[in-house]
Amino acid sequence: MVDPRIITPRVGKYYSVNESNFGRWNRGMQTAVRALNLGLLAALKALLLTYVLTTITDTSTLVLSLNIVFLLLYLASMLLTYSALRRPAKAI
Image 1 (cartoon, rainbow, N blue to C red):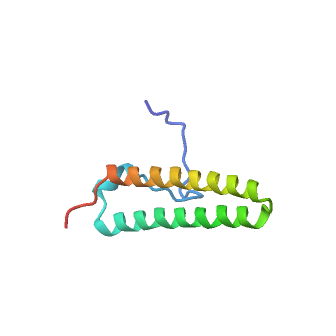
Image 2: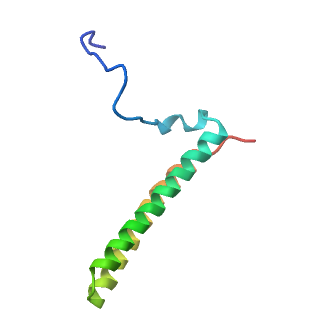
Image 3: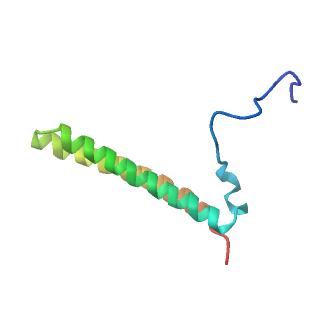
């Protein structure tokens, strides 16, 4: 049931993409979303490594921190990769 008193703004404050419709998008849009995901992952890697390498001076803490950073990057990469594999690209 939809309440008729609910009013949504004509123009929202942000743009959202529903990736559940990924299979219906054209190949160019699918490629753009995958490239964006890879770009976000690269930016996350750069930020985390920059933070760790510029703020930590103790060797043992640095080694532990780098291991944690690479674990986080592995988990983020896994989430993006497996979500992309569940949604195959359109055939040419």
